[in-house]
Image (cartoon, rainbow over all chains, first blue to last red; front, side, top):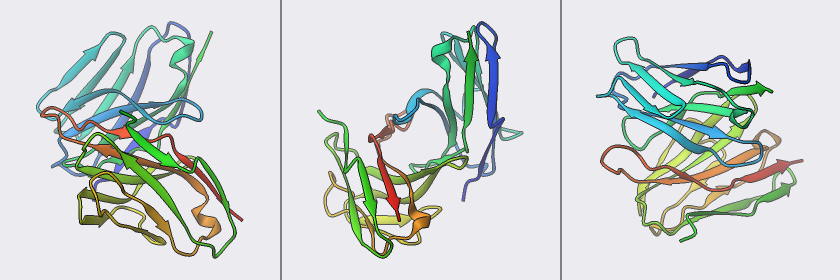
Length: 110
Length: 114
């Protein structure tokens, strides 16, 4: 089955700086790559996703890039704010069978 | 439209007890799944279902059973609880929108096995 690795496990940045989280996947047939944000004690919420036929997608301060050849994808958050502090999960799937990375705890210091 | 409803929110079990975690969705999603979340290990897929009457195993199925008798409900059964099953459990439902899988998570069940 699919195996997703995520790095780093923790990330601390100063408010206003950028944050980058990277994931790799093993199944070359995976075609859908979402990112989820989970605040303490709450359920994961989808923040952005990308399909395998797209190399980059942007939504305001959040962007995701995908390199199919290398089988890795990344989340970029610009102009970070304290409310961006949360755990972020990447995931990969080629059907409804979604596999998640281990998560990155992002802390944005004011 | 309640989305995905999980019950209970909290549960404490003794080793060897059995229980069922309930999950219901009112969005007519074909696909439902159960994940467990442990510190440092992300969300791991336990079981999933692609429609009523169809279930399959995920990454960590041992110790858990599921059934899908209706589109709306997807209960997760622990037959004989073990301390290793202490975790937060999330149910999710999804459908293919044409461009993405619209995953919706329930609010989670925090299970402690003592």
